[in-house]
Length: 343
Figure 1 (cartoon, one colour):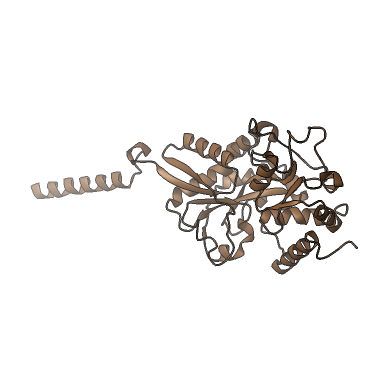
Figure 2 (cartoon, helix red, strand yellow):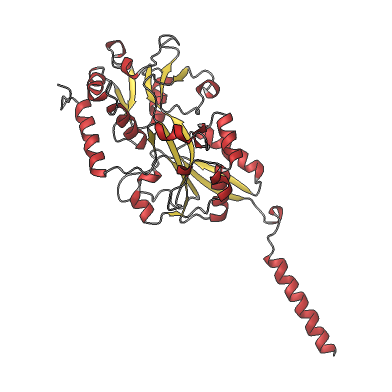
């Protein structure tokens, strides 16, 4: 009898211990917070604000923002520099079919409730990435070199002789953003290749990233530029004090950059990484980004029609790679004076 009772008591203790072991421990009992590495091409200030806000809501996870430019290096080593981080955000994820096929990104397991509140195009059909942020390509100007009223609000105006030696642009094929920028120009009958020829005659400065365009304008090296200002989607709210940098939309319209976010297939903290991506897509987070000028409101349902109409970057568009390469070649030849498309 005594042995039976001892066996029963021991079994009970073992079961209870197993249940306690299986039960998740409170965050404060788990030791140091999880260090989540977020590799992003978003403006550093925007990313830091989002990381801090997430940390307030999830103190057991600290998001550390890492940045590199360009985010996606070309060649055999593509992806090797960042695939061991936890989360990646960039405009070019959807266009890198080789990385998607290689399984560099893990499946996200997105929350269905959040997705129902957002546009249907937010999620990749294969579940490898999701659109979490948007921005618009704008005209930039240096307030110390150009007055607010004299600053250009038109792409066509930038091609006039008065801006000779004063304009900075992204170089063709420099990035996904550059591809979108030049497609935007060529698709417009009032711009097209003749506009590129005029910009060539205006001795435009070509740079490899939007950050470099922004720096060239803010430092007064060039008084005008066209790219994505790094101070957020609302220039009036986020322009750094003393920078002298201003921005405005072009009269011809503007291309929309869609930033995709993915979880690395080798993420050290996959559960925390998926939690962070789902948090970025929550309606409350999307509303916070819109209200604070950190993203555009086109990700919300009800505004999806606007997203469909505008020229967009960063989506997995059905573009023939050979045709895209040929277009880049024609753009370069025109800008370098090796071909006169319009004559």
